[in-house]
Image 1: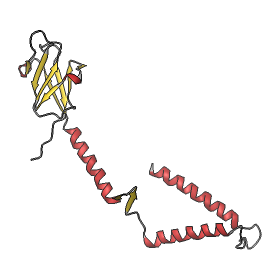
Image 2: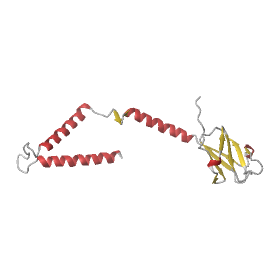
Image 3: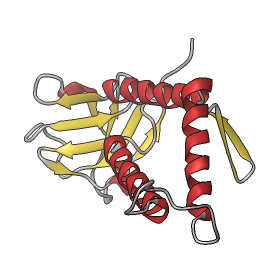
Length: 179
C-alpha cells in the first residue's frame, strides 16, 4: 500500500513538473522563456519545489506529531500503541480454551432442570469465561447463545439430552486476572 501511494505521488509530481517545464521552456535557444505574466506561476512552483527538496535533504525533516480535529497524537506513541494492542490481541487469542465432555469425564456435567421444563445442563469450567465468549456445541450443533447462563465458572445451557451420546464441547476465552 505504501509503495502504491509513493508511486502515485511520484506520477503526480512528474506531471506537475512536466507542465511547469513545458510552460517555461522554449524551442529555440536559450530554451528558457522570460519571466512574465504567463510564466510567473511556473517559476514560483519550481522555486517552491526546489526549496522543499533542499529543506528535506539538508534539514532531515520528518513528521513528529499529527493534530486532527483538536486531537494531537505523536507518531512514535501511535506506533507503540498499535504494537501494544496487537500483542495484547495475540495473547488474548492464544488463551482460547476448549473443554470437551464425553464418556470419560461426563461426571462433570450436571442436570439442573426441574420436571416439566426443558432440559438444562450445568458445567463448571476450569477457568472463568468472559461473558459473550462462550460457545457450547452438542456434537457439531451450536446451542443457542441467548439461553446461556454464566455465573463465575459455572455455565448453564439447554440441551437435547443429558447423556454423553454426542459429547459436549465448550469454547471460551478466560477472564484474565491481574495478580
